[in-house]
Length: 400
Figure 1 (tube, rainbow, N blue to C red):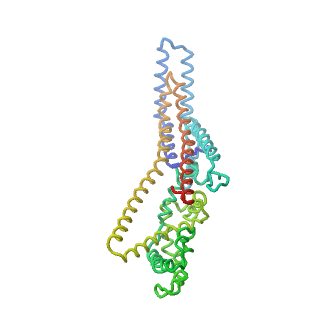
Figure 2: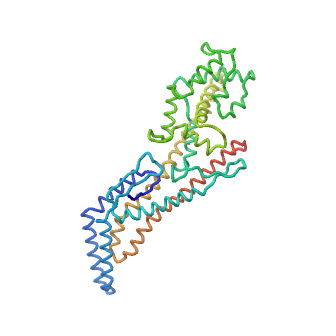
Figure 3: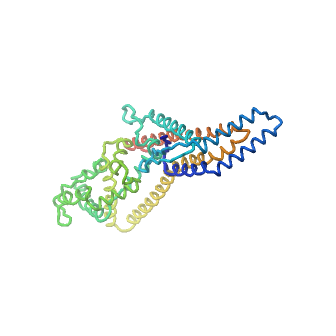
């Protein structure tokens, strides 16, 4: 079975090939070829420059095209390299004249794209040797610039239900108090890879809901921030939905976050720590808002305006990133669909005195299509390298 490699929307390509198979193997298509063949023969015979040899060659070409289009077929397997959860899509009885160039060009394009990305390296930013371009973020395996899009979504993770209120209340009454008393260091907390561990209170003087801050952290906060807690599980599920992680995917939100931490960020941090830090940051912002509520007037109003502006900019950023993430694979699918969709019409026009030129155009269409793969690979690599460089600069305090 021949494999046709695609880079997203494999089910769409499989459906298109199924439709074209029905069209090209129909009696209507055969009738069109017969009519075109008769017109071609009349044109050649009636042409003063025509010779019997040209007529015989044209007729032989017509027979080959018709035979490869309507008689000889091949079963193909559409393999989506980007969305494996779609599953391989078999298409039965695809005309050989369509299946062969699609298979050959698809295989060559996939191999060239994979080879191109295999030689890319990413600077570590620490003076060490460069690392290989992460396989999980290669364009032959995933969507364009997925690392930054997923990182953006992870940073927006937040607790749901009563959990965020409890964590914010703990930060407001215990962590802020410990910072003011010198028991906790603000810079240490803000620069910690594990914010949950960094904000552990040792305060036995202040209480929340009848528990000391130390006991509240141990018996409430740590229990809320682990799988099994209903609110935490709902938060992870919501994050996985935003990350387009399906139930059949090999990834989970912590696993995907771990890939980002290992490949995009110059830090030693687990995926769970990254997600928890994002959630705790939202709770910290809520606690800071509670602190500002103590003061009336300009300060509180300014904080509300800043929060509203932040939400507006975030919504705009999400909108743009979603469009970009979906647009580029759709453009490739559109180009691939156009090539496949035009195939029967080019073949009909090939039944003419200009048969050689039309068949050359037909093959060039498939070669042009596969040139998109290496182009995507280069663009994806440049974007990832730029994002990685910015993250290193931010981590080193050099700014962005």
